[in-house]
Length: 129
Image (cartoon, rainbow, N blue to C red; front, side, top):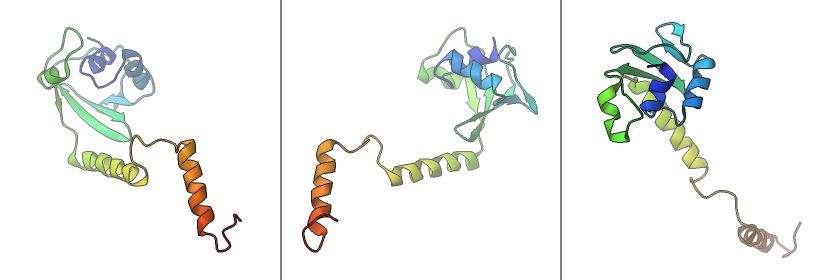
């Protein structure tokens, strides 16, 4: 099985096209060698994948015949990612959540008007500056 198809099958990438692009951008390695999307996967090989500024390491346990359900992924691959990399990801996510809560998005027109009313009521003369 090709490496791009394998990464798609174990749900590491959402689409096979994304997996192929990542291979072409030299973000997937085996040892010190960047891999092409057509590289054949063998059992026992360890791949390093750079995704979201984190270097994941995955060992191939079995080769799936097609895309897997999320619960079955652990039967086909083993995550060997360093704990340092996982902590780095958690820290980054916490920094982003501190700045703005997920899902809030842009303020609505009503929110903006309420904010403008609040700001204008704080000025000493009651007038906008």
